[in-house]
Image 1 (cartoon, rainbow, N blue to C red):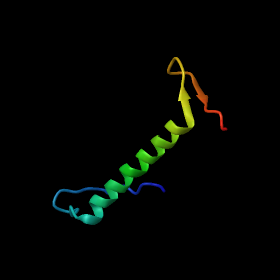
Image 2 (tube, rainbow, N blue to C red):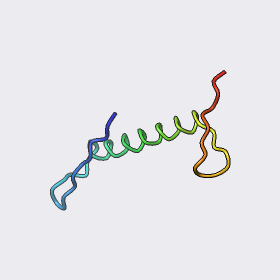
Image 3 (spheres, helix red, strand yellow):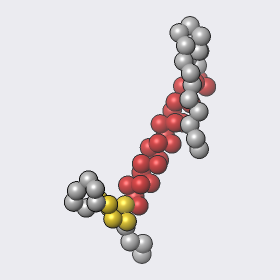
Image 4 (tube, one colour):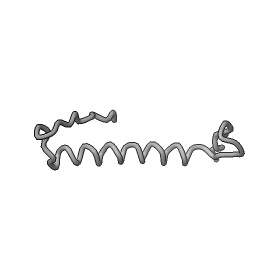
Amino acid sequence: MAYTKTTWGNNVTPINADNLNNIEDGIEDVDDRVTEVENNYIYFGTEETWEEEEEE
């Protein structure tokens, strides 16, 4: 799911459950994607070297 950014303005944009939950959902989505990458790839050696994990 694509993140929908909230455009904040002083004394304009309410700090409420909907806006805070939007932030939380965005953070959770990014964390899920990072975890998926970590689970699908094994890091070997240098920063430039990634090798796809073999499926059993």
